[in-house]
Image (cartoon, rainbow, N blue to C red; front, side, top):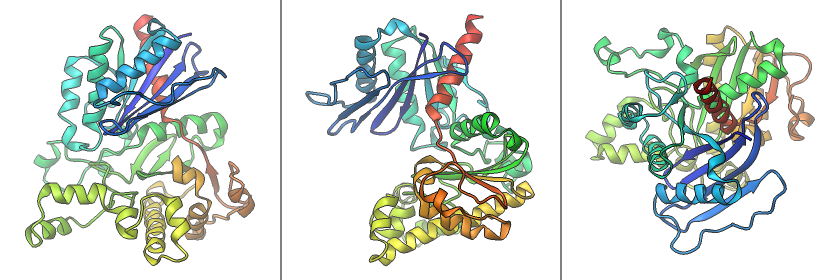
Length: 397
């Protein structure tokens, strides 16, 4: 086996996955797990795919107070079950690669410092991604580490769609549209190339709908437009993020309502979206259950749907039409009512829903006439494993 460890670190969690990447194109899941509640009541969960029982379902003692301790627990579990010497490399999800990093890269001191400078561009994610990298560097200094970027897939967006209408001196500072969820979109593009070869050169709109949500317009399997911009705050309404907003609202809140920049940032990132509109939850399942009796929950759902349809129209205009619409990520893959409502909103483009297929979670949910609508599970972790393994192979050749 050639094992690759995949890490995805958040503010209070470290998700991990272990893959056997010995055979290119046939990467195999070995285990997946997470350490949640860092600094609080820590929970450990892991699932193995070889049928081996695993009894480590909780972290005892005082829990885990930082990312280093979390990574240490993961390494200890690997040592106990597989031996650390079997690890060929570790791949990290890094949210922001800026303009410099448009493909996966092996990490070193210089690269890490460059990524640290991007923390202001992704304040909710980047520092935590780097915390896992720093921890692994200290705990396993000889293990090669690879950074895989959520922004890299969108490097193909043309300047006319990437740049804002700002003075060129500001654009030169790196203020531009970067786009995110690129690992998810890259996986979908790869799967389309395998499963639907007739769509590889087509006009495809992918809706990555989860607690974070975005759209990506693809032509020839490459990104030509995306709804997220300079930050992961832009574009669609999300679980707790507002999405696109008139910048003058921010001036008003700071100048006339006395809110600080930090207060506004926290509100836009953490207290808006489905949670802010509903006043109840950012979980679609909770809102669906409450919608019949709670007007605010119903409004949040309707607004979420409306914003997707509105943004989809813009993306389809950039594509010059559409051949396929693809739903992915947690909400996109599981909320049949949302899919139905979006397709109803796009009916003028010729979309016809196959209601039974949609309700039974079939892969193809459109009727035979009109453009295709598909539901495709995404797999960001395996994309990281593939990209990491490719770099390690190139190093060893």
